[in-house]
Length: 477
Ligand SMILES: [Zn+2]
Image (cartoon, rainbow, N blue to C red; front, side, top):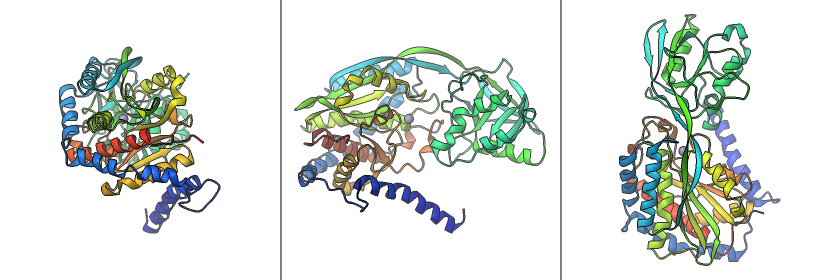
């Protein structure tokens, strides 16, 4: 995009964040930075400065330096990827239960939930015309298989749903629809992955291929879940690489016929799995709960180090570190590992449904599931006063440059609570490269950095401690 347009666009984005922040922070008053927190709240938050420094020191220079990464490494090398419904996922949960006991956490238990078990099996996508090329691909979670031998059909490439809509049914009937949509934002672009198959099926397509949802690729396909619309014929769907989607688009633009064979043998059933819970029981108001969380399941490609072992482990070490440091908060700090996030927040939704009698006591819910690159601050959703309190406590993290508050959706699993107005925070980190590795073979331990994990663990532990311990609850307004 031209420079001036980019500037305008950046200003627009900045306005989305800052202009919004102004109106939320100040309530009826439009003056920026006007939070009007009572002085006693400000003083209470400020009183945690020495605890914050103590926690940072413990992780970054002290006895826990390198330990979080070491725990992740041991876990990842032992189990690898942890697909929903797989035995290895259950084994990894058992391992974390035992490790939680060894580390003297409290109220350690699991919560049973039925989860989808989708197994991709053998699969391939081959360009047959105008030349033969094996295309790296990954079937999308919950896709049906193709018949044995696959589907061989002409392909038609579109850049958007609008382009597909503009085609007649005759033009799409019996073909494989290829989506070559550009990557804009994950939330928007992943729409093609979620409903690409059903949209193509409505027009009579026999299968769909979706350009992987990533801004960058070295010929890597990226998987993810998709959802069939009700009352629409189900067709097989897979992700192909950015490179191949663009290639097919160029071939079509030259007026050449494209023929592809797509072969998939995916199966699906259901299995029992578990969410895992481990607490540091509150000293004063044990019924009040602050959650730190991540999801323990992963896709079957890569080993899920980034998505989401990193997020799980910084949540898991928070209560352990606090206990070791003798910092038991007033409220209970609950580490929650959700199962089957990748297949559609299955674990989180079941947990919320079975524990909604505790919702009134949930003071704050935190989730780390968008990378553990250098911490920058928090993404927050909730009451304006809560935003002011969080903004105030982030001032204590200037030594590690993690003071930024973004007013945006903080997580995926915790939306089961934030959508009800329960305040939540997500780890805001320098994750510009997150989608390079996301849901792909490249999501391995090499994405993580031990020193950066220490910073995240320190930040996550200290933030959750302050919120679990400070005199005032984060209000819901
Ligand atoms: Zn995730």
